[in-house]
Image 1: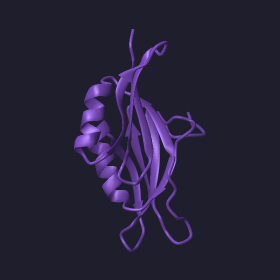
Image 2: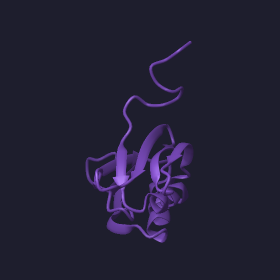
Image 3: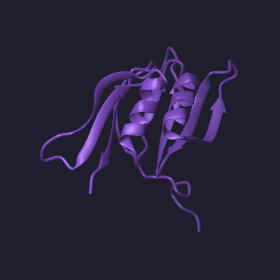
Length: 128
């Protein structure tokens, strides 16, 4: 059966336009075990478009150009082990914003960091 979107893709995907796209892709693969699904390079070798699966979500990334400059954003992701994921991110060069903590009246243990492109990531695990 034909569908309006690729099989197992979510309906909404963040799209990051960044400097050093390949470095960000490598960083996300190491932190989140991201899987590259599709990729299209420009003739100069820069990344025109790539899609990464992070758990059950797809994120899209492109190298910045003069017509499409880099933008920074904030992303939130639930992970099975917030402490392990956070430690991996810091070890892989991400900049600390807040160490994982479980605040009063919040079922999530949450931490945050900046990736090498300057995007703000909040990672959390909900406590049962």
